[in-house]
Amino acid sequence: MNALGAWIEPHPEGIYVPPADAWIDPSQPKARALVTHGHSDHARGGHGAVWATPETLAIMDARYGEQAAHPVAYGETIRMGDVQVSFVPAGHVLGSAQIVLEHGGERVVVSGDYKRRPDPTCPPFEPQPCDIFITEATFGLPVFVHPDTGDEIDKLLEALRANPERCVLVGAYALGKAQRVISELRLRGHDDPIYIHGALQRLCDLYAAHGVPLGELRPATGVAKAEIAGQIVLAPPGALNDRWSRRLPDPITAMASGWMRIRQRAVQRNVELPLILSDHADWNELTDTILEIAPKEVWVTHGREDALIHWCMTRQIKARALDLTGYEDEDD
Image 1 (cartoon, rainbow, N blue to C red):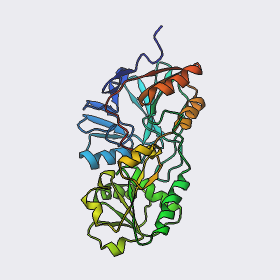
Image 2: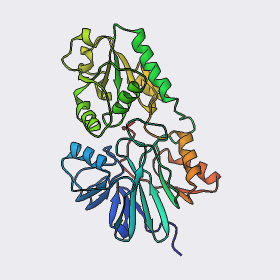
Image 3: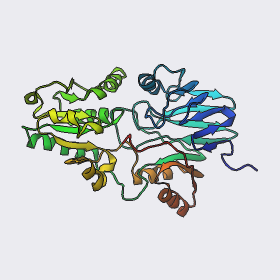
Image 4: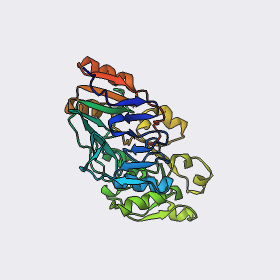
């Protein structure tokens, strides 16, 4: 009798599904790739053909040029070889999906990166009962419990109100985090123009084109200091302490990331205002999701695997690490 999931082959460069002759999130160019979302550690250029949500394919087109694309809408089921494949929301960023594979009476869910918190920029995570749940563990330690999103956004707005002669410069990754920060600010009633670094413009435009309202955005480059005083500016994390930021009026340097839970990371980046705002599940969300889905086995792709595997084993859930390479934490 074959082991559960014997038709799924983890390799260092990704997950290969032989009966579909396709790879999931491969880190090297492959003939046929299924892609969970558009972050560069999951979506690479150079594949012969790509199956993903229309939004993820649009992101890949923007980053890598036109793809040999096969769009799959949420809830749509396609057949690849002897495998039924469907894409359901993962709640991570625009277009992010869990890939559901059904073959030989077994159901495997490759969740990609995901979160359980509400996010105005993308549909929420949809739990999928399955035999094998393939999960990340980016924040797979009990110390990582993310605070309320609204409270973190309120910290940002309070700093802005208390320092009208300064601006608040927020470091946020270009795909997902920047647009989420903007959308959360709008939900909290911040209707003023938000100034953005040029590196964020293309993906902000893409989100707006896909129906995500971001309000008025203005280029931050070449603007007089007096105009930006008392305003919010967003930039990639790498711009927080470079020459570009020196043109701003005495900025309060902030960073939006789940890693701001670790004080040393904030110190290393010279962050005055750490904002713990993650696009990944925290420890409780990881474990609650596994309990809700109730898989027979849990496979962990990347992150803090040991603690999550130990937690599973103490609850009689078989678990293993896949030892995939090339997945990073830099999208948070």
